[in-house]
Amino acid sequence: MILFKNAIEQIIASVSALTVEEIPIERAVNRVLSSSVSSAEALPPFTNSAMDGFAVSSRDFLNLSTPFQFRVNGIIAAGDAPIERLNGPNECWEIMTGAPVPAQCDTVIKVEETKRDGDYIHIHRAPVAGENIRNAGEDFRMGMPVAQPGTRLYPEHLMAFSALGVRNVSVFRSPRVGVVSTGGELASNAALGSGKIRNSTAPYLLAELNALGMEAHFLGVVADEPKAFLKLMEEQLSQDVEVILSTGAVSMGRYDFVASALRDLGAEILFHKVAIRPGKPILFAKMGKTAFFGVPGNPVSTAVGLRFFVEPYLRALQGVLQESPHRAILENDTKKPSGLRCFFKAKTSHERSQQSVTILKGQESFRIAPFLTANSWAILPEDGVSVAKGSEIDFYPLHSWGHKEDSL
Image (cartoon, rainbow, N blue to C red):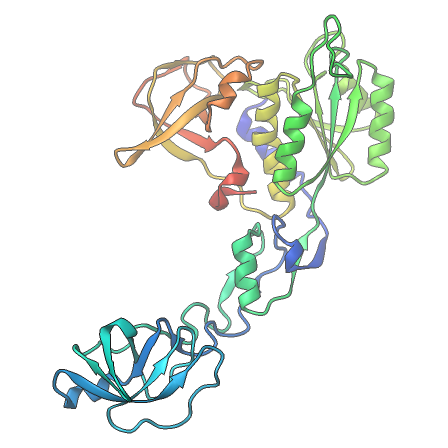
């Protein structure tokens, strides 16, 4: 049995980068950039008005007294070409939002701050230069970095790319993940036979993996039959799948056959059992370029295996920075087993300018109901048999894909 930090080090060290592909930005949401994107032009591309109003030169107000009177030269609408005509003294232009500001003008007076009188407007205050102006390059300067390699793309990235004329981006190919369930106790249909249970972990894993942008596929249920498991593994290895994730059959029981089956396949088992709760029997192996994660079959153990072992591998595979924990004040005294790092279902809230975290009742790995209340994972260190209320501890959001700053 190894420590959690040593397990993660071995996982990261085993990674080989994915191949890359160039795709249209319309297909890029949830994909990870393999090369940087920089602005090839300025945005806005020209200085324009932020309001409907009148474009004036603030210098003209120096020689006038209130109320200020300006002659209106004409109207500039959004989409019009820039006005090249020079203003005379105390002249202005009626201008619409987004329209190019004439070169001599440096300010836009909002229409509601003016009074129209034929070809003239009256203004009752002297503006500050730059009011209601969007300067060329104010949003993006030419050559400015837009997104770095390892960035997971969201719709807001597509907004920026579209505005800057970026039509295609280079991304890592989506990792292919096969999910296989083991156990003769898993029901094959909706009706439960005697001694059977429904498969709850496979739908969970597939939903999480697909939300993370993976190409996740269910490979089916293998009963406690090592030969059937070996055949399935051989089929998947021939298809160059990046990750295989199995649930169950990794502990020490008579029917826990996964470790021995992997050895028969010639797999390199990097570790089997980690000092954690829940999920201690977790197994990690490599079969060529394919990573294999064997996680215990209890629902919460499966969730911990995915969140804190498989996800770091998938991050490293795509060049994404590893997730960093948040800190919070523990709201309740909590017992824990000595020597094990604990990943406990928790409820985090933000009060009085600080994060607080409450560890929920029902931490047994088979209990799903507390999961519905949880919004985070509280992390308790290996040392000690309890953590006192008021201690500062690490926590992670329940799902990484809902948090852009830490997302996969």
